[in-house]
Image (cartoon, rainbow, N blue to C red; front, side, top):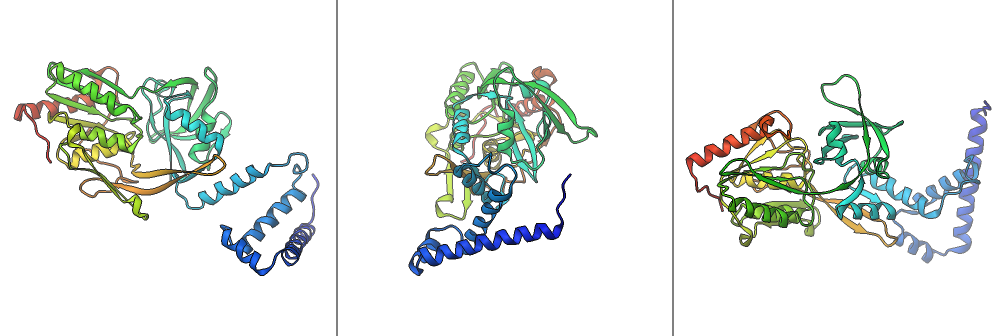
Length: 411
């Protein structure tokens, strides 16, 4: 191992900085007048001193980094790296910079078909957590659960990574394998899960009759056509004789705000659903149910758990606050903020948290979550007779039917 004295290293560093500074100074003096400097400072996102520091840092790395000459980094990658670092300085896991290729991948995901493991993940307190595994996905089949912390992917420790970097690492070609190591509450050792990637086909609505008069409607996400599919499902349940309903939002990681408002409108005769509050005037919005979308006032309960997030919490919060339904299960995840995509001129984009959700009663969801009216521990089970949360929700609907078969929705 070759070592250099600290004195020698300091000399090299200071020499480089001085040479860079001198070069920048000469450049400004020879090539720019006062008017040009004023124009530069007007257009630049940083002051002249900050730009100077960036220039120094780049010059030092390109001059002395051992691989810099043989492996030069393209200008756009340097720029994107700087932008990513700038955005991360705000310490908001949901405000993020997205490079052009990554943005295209996310657009593919929103279309409802992609290769991966089938789970929503998010970042909280510097940890990458499973928000919810999707139904009938590799993640669900191996037993991953909400709140599991992803610590390692194959041989790479992902501590300190942002959620989108982890998402990119988890995706790959179908039929390829990946190993996850997770930390789970109550377990002393890390848990190891071996998964095989699949083409994930997102089906957002499932429904059936649980008895002669109680219907079951499960929403697994809020995509572009989820409200249309849910509306058709509810109509079919009503034709089959449903007089009560269990709406299952467990392990639903969320989705589109406008879809959640329209779904809420199926059960509310107008009135408030959710309010967004932010700094910008346009971020402050009040969303109400459209009376024309109202379908039924039948008695109902809503199932939630730690995997219920975002749009799920909007629907559950609105139905709870409006006295339309009780919540059964466990506390929801607490992802109650609004992100807007701002496209940039090179095909990249910025997702920025512009507001937080407030339920009709004014309660904040973000980092708090919704507490169930009736807490029942357990997990969704394909054998519904063994699903303790579902069985309790059904029992509550039966009580409501016994009291008033007509039900009623508050306005």
